[in-house]
Length: 231
Image 1 (cartoon, rainbow, N blue to C red):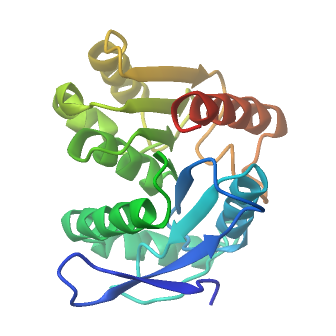
Image 2: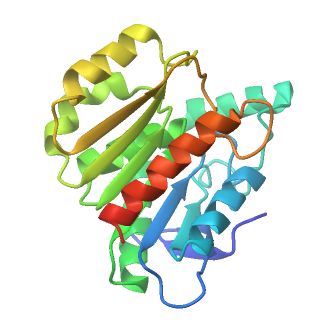
């Protein structure tokens, strides 16, 4: 199990397991790293460590802890991919958002700087929800699934939101991408970047889905975004 910290829920009826990675010296801000459907696996662990190496307090909460804590799945193994889809299908997004509100509150109690959140796949959707439904300072979503159905919430965004959209995403068809652009392109709180020809999972840390050039470009944009907004 990769988590090392328990974060109390807002109702004090449980604890969210999380991996917390501290930077050397005082944090310049905090980055919450929200997993794909594969748990806090080695790829998410490495992303958290990378943010800490850049000077941020990094927190990777176990999103599926209410179903089964400690899930670590490999997207390149077909059986584990199907298992991950099952966990996502059973995930309570409303309750999960409350868990992330607790993580946000805990992060602010640890460090009085700004807080950003970066999420992938399911975590990309959660990044959008956090931007629209909380007062988080900045959110970044990589290939978020289901955002097109929530674009009417964009007027609630008070912080800054960055979305990375691969045009060949098999989980987000072209009509959904068009709906996102139509609703969000004029919003001063939202920035969208398209990645022509790339598919879902192109910024995976390891594995077959990764596009090295695409991942490096998106990650560079994310780093610049957080440096500007979070610190």
